[in-house]
Image (cartoon, rainbow, N blue to C red; front, side):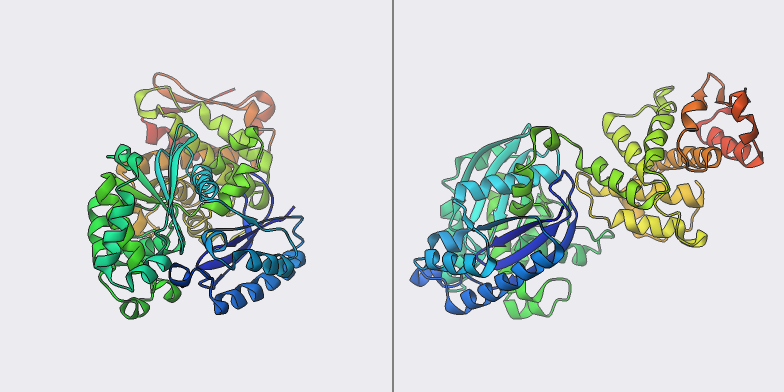
Length: 490
């Protein structure tokens, strides 16, 4: 059942309604209003009246929308502005009346913990330091081995820095450097990953994508090496908001805070010696949901969970996808060329779950449409090369292993070995589909194995009538790819 999250930050107020409290939820509704509640707090200690009025109007609407969508649960929280402002308590009372729900004012430590949970939910195995930059504060927290380590909250939010420095970047840099110099665990990050969370840093990444003409416009797990990231941050930190507002690649409303966000990032990279920055679309909101899951549910793989959902919603049979995973298992481990790591097996299984999602499209567009859906899908737990691998494997499943019809530049994100592997998996899937008609109950009775010289398809007598020219042709295609002779036995 739908679940609502309301996040009242120092810069933005947001409602997201997810389709359920589960490992890989999908957003049914997502709306953000940039209210600037934290503007001026560093000067007079109060949230500004204009921001409060806008926030209360937004919360009234969020209440109505959440009810309209049929949300059964709501989790609402407020961060730095509400916990620090002298009029914060009154604002929360008014906000709860507008929203019709209790609002939890998070401590800095709790906010950092939710941000860490969010990164861990979206990037399983993440290890390094999470930085969550808002309008009023910056949360830094260590993560690794599935655990949350040391954390700290610093008064370095973008809006706060603008107020404290009066827009002077040199003064702001001194403030940032003085604050982060006291964070001892930053030094432990050297050559590690810095996970960036927050709207201003997402716009930083979006602008970097545009400048470098990066071919895959997905922010989650977009990675920039420290050297280029530092140079780009240095450039942006010296630009004025008026210049940035004219750039179409970013949200115009973020133009004011982006230079300060870039400055903070530049200082963090210099201080920590991080290897790179990894963008996370998952933050405190997703972290709060993740924290509500059972211990068992937290262990589920978010990528495979999402791919199973796709199979149930878009494939002809969700049960068939699981059979396809098991059937293709027999191809791997037989010789060095086909051995796979646990990570490669995971991606192969994800590909099998997605292999039939384009069947309703026009035959001439099934491959291209599936490639677009997968490469741009809201999957978690997968980096950009992994996305491209999945997209290519399903494209080849529809178009054939040697098709050159794809016109996507993001092919450059994977190497030849990865493309070759996508062709093998796709060709095995093509054979499976002509044998089974995408219906469960058949593949488990048909054996596919690799011998010293032959690729052997064993068709039991009761399934002998499934043999045909197309089956043999698909078997030949697969045998050729792996350097074997095709053989069919009964």
